[in-house]
Length: 93
Image (cartoon, rainbow, N blue to C red; front, side):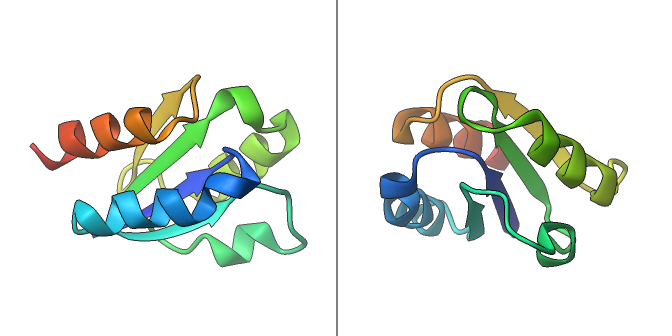
């Protein structure tokens, strides 16, 4: 299964990917707005938006690209590793 994480802290990217690997997810993490971000997202099974650390422009760009019928979207105010682990556990169940 694949997950895309939007937002979060730059220094936590490696930890986010490790947490996802531990839960059997392949992860893409975008903490900053990149040129062509809408083309890099793909078709994930799960999209996690860390709303405290992401711009409105980035959220709009991502949500316009994602197929809401195929992708589960989770919004979380905190961008901690524990919050990510809880989201992945709930989604796996």
